[in-house]
Image (cartoon, rainbow, N blue to C red; front, side, top):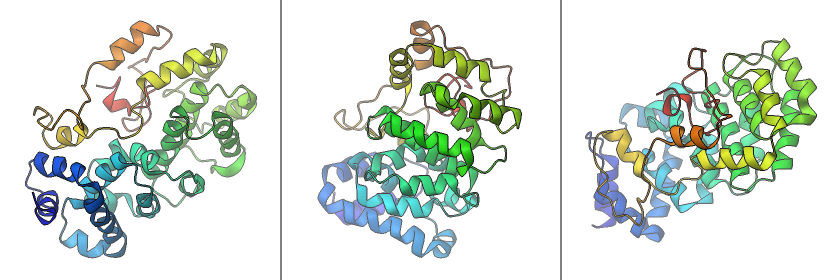
Length: 300
């Protein structure tokens, strides 16, 4: 398939996943990358026009560039996070709620300040800030950012860099506190609970204390086993377009096999338990520590 044909296939939203075009795009990295980067630039520079005449190219571009670990996409996606939530959802569909955090982590160039800027900006949509914070979670589990550096930054968030209003971001921060055993921040965490910044129905303070009492290697290993991690395959794309369809793209690039990870996780790590009677936001990190959204994990 010619490059122009690949782009045409990726641009048309006809309800079908363009599997052949995706496969060919992955095989022609050098040729396709500049065009995909240009599509993200177009989102930023011509947002209004794209809203009038939407296409799906930027949706596929984000996944493909993330699989390529293309760091040139990093500043572009950072800028996209400052767009209104409704606008970004229109342009990149399910990515906002499902995989923005994975894509951010995958294209990160090692400079974490832009991600922190999103987290700390109260004017940025809450879902985008949540994705930015969760991207640091993935980067830490993938050993791209030192866990000690992340814990230090989490302390800064608790101590003032995060506005003191209840939000999904506070809930995500609390979840991460359990995973990374932020014992030194116990007083700050307890204070956040007393101020009702963290929804205790999402994760109780006692749970954070319990996780902090376990050997760190067990908690981190369990979390890493269940975390989705960097974008390493693109099977999730086809599930967005047709959840019941089979994956027909070559195994080298599409090797992921979906299974009931939650059951495996709970059988191997019995200390993990999620009370489904408690109210948990469907777009929040699952309290089980999987790194997935609640609706895609224990909330199913």
